[in-house]
Length: 72
Length: 247
Image 1 (cartoon, each protein chain N blue to C red):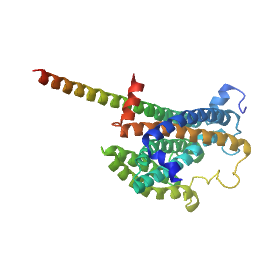
Image 2 (cartoon, rainbow over the protein chains, first blue to last red):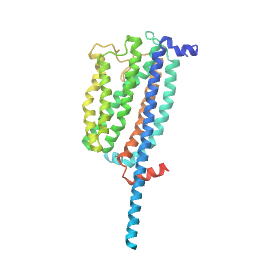
Image 3 (cartoon, chains in turn orange, cyan):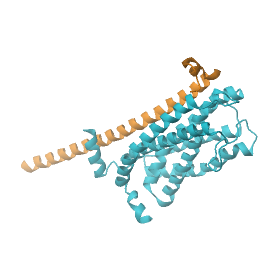
Image 4 (tube, chains in turn red, orange):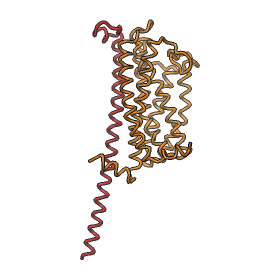
């Protein structure tokens, strides 16, 4: 352990601001990247599901129409 | 070898294979980064000249090395996409670009935060810094081109050409500290030969570097899977898979 107290650890020998700025910005950017990757994965799946639901609906409607025209 | 590689041109097989790899990369990254960053922040010795500010090194250097390696990987993928018309290669290049852009940004920001106390300035237009900034713009250009076309084959072609032309920037970044007089110091770590640093600094660096490398692998796998799904949305296997997961 290089630091004898928590305050000393935060201070980083006077370079605290720069060290924590670096670690903070790096963490922020990495978290944003992970979140963006997870969200876009979910969005793509939802888009595909929606597309699929619409296609099934169209198919069902077409079938119904065919049945109606047959019975009349 | 072609026989062995051939199944991986099939998006479904590749999707499931990537899905199997992702948790391994994720856990390796978490473990290595937990050890590496704790070691770097608490136990690694301070530099005799730079004091505690040297701890920025453990993010800055892995991020800078990875920003270049990711670019080379992306360019190789783009090249195989252009030459052999591999759709999956284009998808992997599209998955890599945002990851590389983030690591380039981290290298630039941590570099600025390290430069301020050491050189007395956040930014200077010297060769190393400027060429790394150009790398960021190349990444942004590649991302923009991937998103600019509805037709993904066309987008892959356009982005691929930019990615390949941009490779010229990589040796410029790497050797900029030798070719020109710059504020930036020379390489501390090299792949070949002994590192120019003591073991109690080198080991935490290795943990951080491989931790970030596996982070790149994990995030790229996730984005690659998204790209595969998005580009094959009309295939029956994708429909079945999405139906299963969305429920």
